[in-house]
Image 1 (cartoon, rainbow, N blue to C red):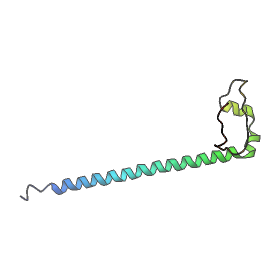
Image 2 (image 1 turned 90 degrees about the vertical axis):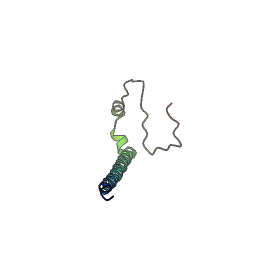
Image 3 (image 1 turned 120 degrees about the vertical axis):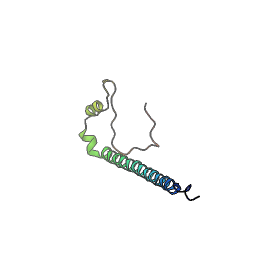
Length: 94
């Protein structure tokens, strides 16, 4: 009887090791995704802070902004306003 159960501990140990490695990988992937969200949040806040600064609107000429945004037609003009964007007041294009 003892000879039949001889490899059971090795199989059980391998299963527990596989479970531990899988849990650690899930934790690492979750941490990486959380860090990616944090870095993106910081970049978004920095971009909004720069766009809301008054000297940004004075320093950038409308033609530079048009070229940067791909506006090529002379009839399409950008309306540049400095300040804070309020989503409740945004009526969309047009």
